[in-house]
Image 1: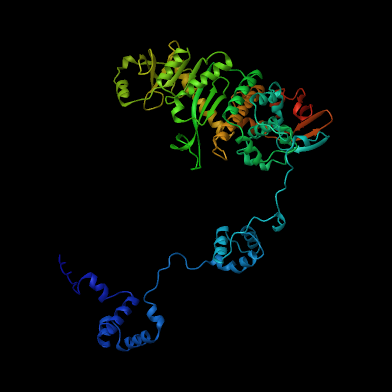
Image 2: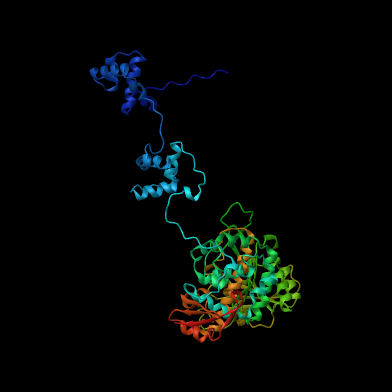
Length: 587
């Protein structure tokens, strides 16, 4: 099939004017020279067409014939990005000379900075690649340049612990106030019952004491132990010559599997109760997502409330004693498929260790299913939860007459909305056997009504609303675990490490609650962060004698609270440190 001839452009068209009347000087020279050498037009005609004088155009033709660079200048390859590197060019000679002396890029950067020529590691790496230098192999210590280095601490080994008399200063003097609290807690027996990994150099008790000490003083990560490895106070608390390094602590956490963490939680649950921590009748339950920053981990996506989005992470189940305000149970790495049944596993754990099921459970609407609520009801366990609101249910609620609502008064004196309206009725839900009590609350400061579900038919509406409002305390408990115990600040997303770190968090939370009970009513509801900041973040002088260890705390404004706690009245045996007695005092 023949192709129709393309219509010729008229000289007045926009495309033709681009060639016939160029604007750029270089383009105008090109078109003029092309008209003279290719089309054969006379020079004075071409000069007039493109705005040259006849003499200037003849000079332009002469340069084009005899100057090759003039011909090459019409067509040049485009170069993207900066054409010069001022920083690299300025230090190129010095950097090459230093690399020939077997210096690394970090050594070269330091030497150049001292000479007044700062350069980034990336710039130096690019410079050396341009000059054909390969990366240096790992060098022995004697081949490295002499520079200031961190002081290396000794290797942790319980066999080299010195019991000789001496005195030293420590920044963690408040850590020793937990020793009298743990007098009734046989940590060695707890560790043995949990069958945790042990070694000759660092037994299991010393390893757990080290990790527990870091939690009690609010260390964010295991790697942050490196700024405390030379503090003899933590080593004394742990029963070692020095604090183990971060590599050991991370490796030890990885050696403990889920069965080990469950044994540790079970034995600690019994031991801390024997030490004086009571068990309340009501338990708050909730889920928390530990976000993962690594994309290589095969993790499911869960909702992260702090970021208002779903992302990869480990789902953690937490139980908090509402009366004692302490975390008492946890499980990490729960798959989405098993999420609704975690409440039943907690009930089994509680019944196995207390001899009876929990009296009351309070939780959110998405924690479990209606079928599991029916299972709890058959076990005579009272529960309170929220019901998910649908558009149809909201329409039904707002259609109820004003006479169906009842005005109640909440006893809390600190609430802004103390007189809400409630609608108390019985409902039947799919999957739940029998009737449920549904209490709808309005005028609580929210636009939508709050719909509570419970199988407790005797509790009054004011008590029910007040009790569920107190469920927010578990949010405070999770916030405390995140802010002070750094639950989310994990250097690795390996599930085993998260699981074990969570158990150490539970242990530290229980010890801080015992501490708050001993201090008195002023700190009865204080969080761990406030207790540590006001009372326990104190330096001390430690004196080791033949028979005892004396810890003299420095002066602080809040020391009278510690005196009133009577934690310093009597010496406390230290079986993990040669059987010496610990004596606490104040400067």
